[in-house]
Image 1 (cartoon, rainbow, N blue to C red):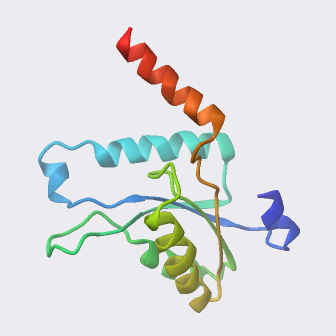
Image 2 (image 1 turned 90 degrees about the horizontal axis):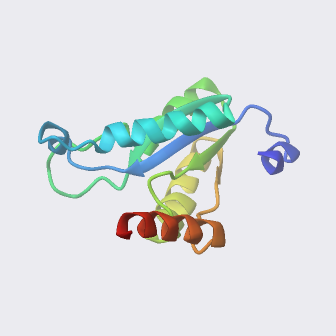
Length: 144
């Protein structure tokens, strides 16, 4: 956030994202949305963002309802408020791949730009030693 503020953006809207799934999955007992909600709420309690939103990305191509709102619809809403900056936090993803490097860094950044919004994104965990250690610890606890 400090980097964003040094660029002159004081009131940054935060958008958390996760991969969308067919809405029917929830009716079948999937807890995906509840896990996403609890993850976001835990982060919000720690970082206390100015304004925050949850969105889903990468809706599939099959003609069924998918979880929403979409990232684009959230960006539209933020643009109507008049915000000039968004920090996107893809909590549903831990490493750089097509849904980060293309969907967020290119498609959503261009979409935001078309709405006169500058889009920033948090870095992915990728091969962070701390992240690797945490994963190894979780696996070890479940093996022993």
